[in-house]
Length: 96
Image (cartoon, rainbow, N blue to C red; front, side, top):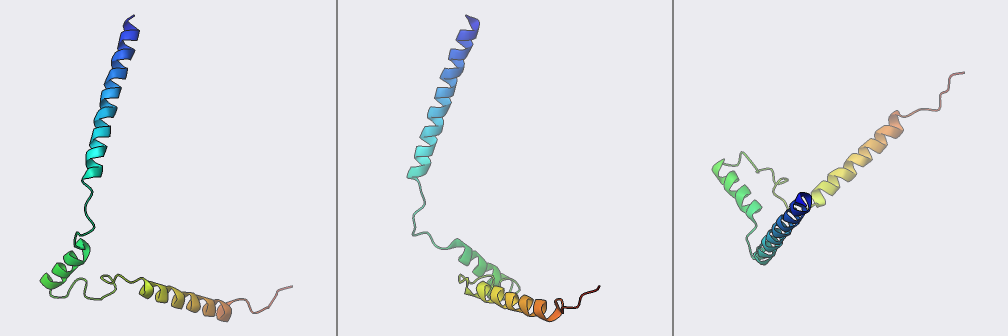
C-alpha cells in the first residue's frame, strides 16, 4: 500500500513539474524577440574599434558579413596545395 501511495505521489509531482515546464515554454515562445532588433554584434565591434582606436576589429575581415573573402582564400590555398603536390610529388622513380 505504501508503495502505491509513493508512486501516485511521484506521478502527481511529475505531472505538476511537466505542467510548470509547459507553461514556462509557452511564456518563452510568446516573448520571442522581434526581427527589428539592431545587429548587436556589429554595434559592439564598432564600439570596441572606436575605443581601442583601431587596435581591434580594424582589419575588415573580422567585421565583414560576406563569406566571399573566406571562399577566395580557401580556393587560393587549394590551388597552392595542388601546385605543391604536383611539383614536389613522386617523379616516377622506383627502386628495384
